[in-house]
Length: 304
Image 1 (cartoon, helix red, strand yellow):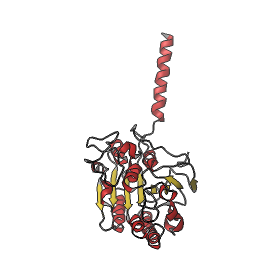
Image 2 (cartoon, helix red, strand yellow):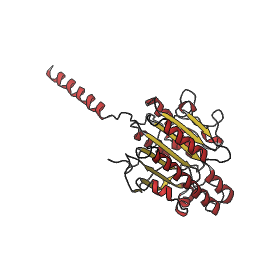
Image 3 (tube, helix red, strand yellow):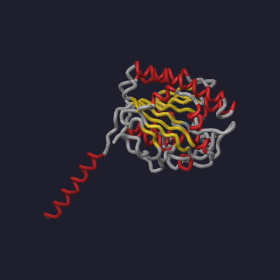
Image 4 (cartoon, helix red, strand yellow):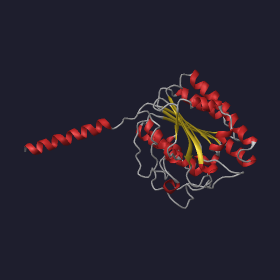
């Protein structure tokens, strides 16, 4: 009996220690800035003082890899689901929920692969989520039941979405929140005028001005210091297209800043578009709940 009692005590202490170690969800604000077609080569050639200032106190990766194929919908789906096309089943820009060759490895009740928005809502029902975009197909793989606000801007517009995102953040400043703020116009400049053309570089630099205005509003509204902000993209380009495996198509910038993030660091270790949702989960103190999520947190991102 003495040995049995000792074993039960040890087992109980182990359970207690494990429960104490598990993180509880936290009341965070996370802002995702998505720029379609913004490859590392474009980042290195364009002038973007506002982006530079925003992430000077954060972590910057310039060798993050896209998933294959290096096209739009598979990569944005990977960013927001922590998985690759092999898991989420989105291989082309023509993916439709009811017309695709390969089903997701895991599905929610409506048949969607689980996104970071579902993860957050399941763990923190009070969290506020929003999705702003200007390319119509982009949202198709995401279950909108887990989004509190969705806005689409016509004709590659994006300034109105930045204003709507700020108003949403201001209105929900006391709640945990996650917003995705996306624009396609840089990608369209690449397709229309070629990557690295004057028009392509101008599209990046004009967006940098808008990002500066947005950050200025966050600061004025007291929403900046305690926010985690990520900037990332889906692919680069070569000539007037993309989808291949060249360095210019496959290597992209990925940046993050916020209270939990290391400061002034260049991330040189491997990183992938599949890691983004897992990093977001960690910010909120949530462990990845899905076996099909293959992303992981790169070492060197979070303050120890």
